[in-house]
Length: 299
Ligand code: HMG
Ligand code: MG
Image 1 (cartoon, helix red, strand yellow):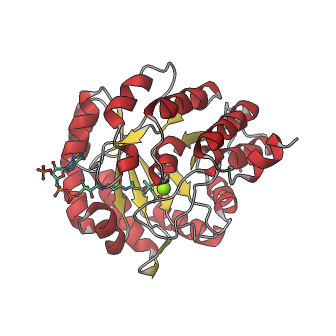
Image 2 (cartoon, helix red, strand yellow):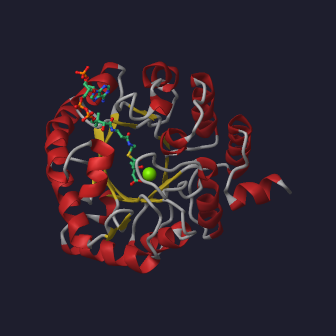
């Protein structure tokens, strides 16, 4: 059975803009987030408190976050890689925190300069302090299906990291197909294994990049399994600077088109959202890769 309602976890302002070549002005980012909220999105990942040299695109987190943090009815998660990142986020009043782990050693090294276990050891006190401060914490797991250096990723390797993140207190997980190589059978296989490992489906979100055009099919497989949190990025912005061959996320418009077609509620106004992506595309000086954005904006 498909769910009646899906919670869309919008990542365009973070996963999308972290991968842009040019720096997007802080006020444009703030306006982007306001427009996303105005289109009915209620969970909007705002930025990352990572090292500014590692992700210069998001180096303005301190300037951006205060401009949007009081948006009514909107949750604004932020990424933190370590203690320093958490301190920066909590100092600004962030109350939705995301740590990001990897299922593979290669990507842990490339993205966090740590082994998988070293990065989990860094997250442990970070998650505890975030929880003590009253925040909700998401634990991302990258490279859940395939890795550009290591190839196919064994599901038990993913399950181990998921369990470690849950044990340290993460309220929710997000299964990342960072390079977009999964197909629906892989998704079903991993979700079945996580069932066996005792990970509750209502604590699982899915995060599909659309490199091979499989993100929507993979999402459908996850919905059939009972997943109700789906990550997507407005206009299909996105990628990851530390994983070659990662392209944009599943476009939020493509997701909303499918969900509404299935009679599943999202709370999103698709016309307003499309207008927002068209507006952002003009700022980035290139068209949105989303098929739905293109179709609706050329009507
Ligand atoms: P490092 O070089 O090992 O850092 O990088 P360090 O711990 O050795 O510290 C070195 C210096 O950096 C110190 O300064 C720290 O204070 C400073 P010094 O004492 O030398 O003057 N520093 C910081 N400054 C500001 N903010 C911080 C911070 N941390 C340390 N948070 C580090 C380790 C984790 C910092 C680095 O690797 C990093 O920032 N990585 C972030 C990479 C990233 O953001 N990747 C993209 C997000 S993940 C993603 O996109 C995947 C996802 O979408 C899911 C999917 O698709 O799979 C989530
Ligand atoms: Mg991502």
